Amino acid sequence: MLGSQVIEIDGIFVGTAILVDRNQTHRFYATHDNVRSLHNMIVPDMTALKHRVAQTFRRMARCDVGALGRLRPQGQA
Image 1: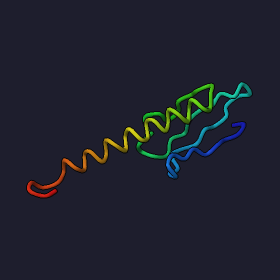
Image 2 (image 1 turned 90 degrees about the vertical axis):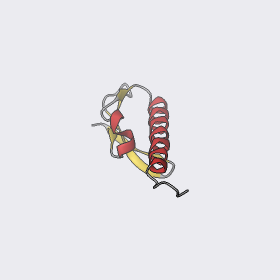
Image 3 (image 1 turned 180 degrees about the vertical axis):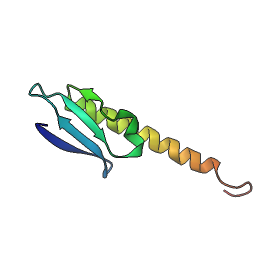
Image 4 (image 1 turned 90 degrees about the horizontal axis):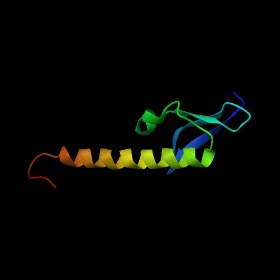
């Protein structure tokens, strides 16, 4: 490992980007369940990595909120 950078989305720590070679290639180490599907993803561009992680995190968060709404007992709002 040549270096690493913490990745936070909306103030929540979701993982770390690990610099794996001198060509600026990064590997994503996921720590949050919402981005677990991206664990060990390798990308050559840090900006693209952050964008992909944020997009996935927010999409999964919306799915979680939607699922909670479906779990309410009938007759309750």
